[in-house]
Length: 291
Image (tube, rainbow, N blue to C red):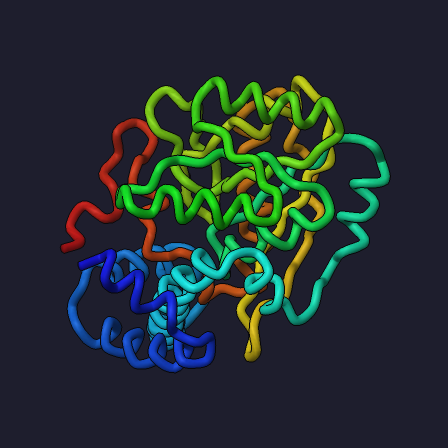
């Protein structure tokens, strides 16, 4: 069924995907479901200053935007980099990336799960093909499709293990660019500390700070924000402290960079992900009683 839907949506035009996302997003908002419950919990925690009505409006728009991303990905995967690049409308902060390349140091591009990260990959591959970790998808048929799509503009994909980390280090030492998704809970053995993210403790990766301890590099936060006719690329300088020897302080700086991106497009963040599932001192997960 998933393969059938993937093939169907791969032929869905961009505007049609947006219209269908509005319909399905409203449907998910009104019907009881796991994604709505998780988004409701996350948004209430991270935006306490909003009224209940405003929080619910953000939940609704989040579901619409998350569905939109899912509907767009099959077409982006199958049509490759040229199609993805054709969707880019404007770029904000290009001077930060240009300066990073001219410095001669390596560049670490941190791309949160915000907007459409596949667009982001293709955009930056134009200037300096990036090295990025790649975990095989749960659906086996997607492996070759995803790999070919991401490599179509020059990306080098490496495994999510010590071999991959060594490849990232080698790229940085050679003055190249690497891409990392900074906002997922690290798995057991991958290295992580609890640090503040939008007012709450979140298990946060330490990979970025570990890389910076070994190799000087310029760090930028990047994402592709969905707009009326496509996407705008946003490039933000990283907050200070990512290279701090104290891993918790470095992780806090990492999360501050993610939050700065999120505030530019709140509804386009992946609020349906259980970002706060693991808590310090074995405290109860905020999603414990969520269906």
